[in-house]
Structure formats: structure tokens, C-alpha cells
Length: 164
Image (tube, rainbow, N blue to C red; front, side):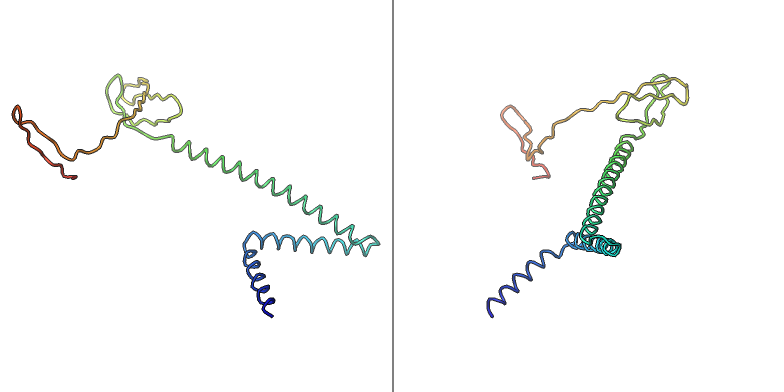
């Protein structure tokens, strides 16, 4: 009796592990595939054929068909995902800045794209100016705890910062 209870507890634990959406989906898919294959096998048997031959043929055709369709859908999703990502990157690489014309010094709102050479035609003098961008790195400094200011030759006054 005790052995049967342990077996039932283990079986319950195993079934809980199988209670996932992936297992449920695969089980339903196999159930429908088996049902359709059974109907085809029964039809083949009624037409004077061999049930298991028709069943296996229908099952194989369905599996191959599902594999081909899923492969095509995965490729389509991958291509669409890449297209959306490229559109987002392109949209993020464009922005507008206020620049003065190199000739007449009038302000212009200029659209800038980071991955290409940029130029703009001035709205005032119609001259074409190039846009040059410069990026640089700077060190991050640590805030000072206190500052010593010399008062005389050998004297200094200590000031504490508000961060300490």
C-alpha cells in the first residue's frame, strides 16, 4: 500500500512537469495529426487497402508538410524582424539640429543622418554648407572632499565641500 502511494506521488510530480504550454501544444498537434491519419487510414481500408499503410502515409505527409510550413513561417518572421529592426535603426540615426550657415551666419534647422555625409542649403542665401560632426571622450572626475586654499607662505585654509 505504501509503495503504491509513493508511486502515485511520483507519477503526480511527473505529470506536473508535463503541464506546460509546449507539451500541451505538441500533444494536441499529435492528437489532431493522428486523428486525420486515422480517418485517412480508415478510408484507405474501406477502399480495399491496408489501414496501417494509409495511416503511415498520411502521418508522414502531414509531418513533412508541417515542417515545411513552419520553416517558411520562421524565415518570414526572421526577415520581417530584421526589416523592422533596420527601420528602427534608420529612424534613430536621423535627428534635426540648429546650425548657422557658413556663409551668411543665419540659423537653419538641418536634418542630420549619422551614417552618411550631410550637407544643407541655407534658406536665406541658398549656399550649400557641409556639416561636420566631432565626437570625443572626456574623463570622469571624482568630487573633492575638501579644498585647501593657501593663505600665506606656510598657511592654508581648509574648506569642506557640500558632498562630504
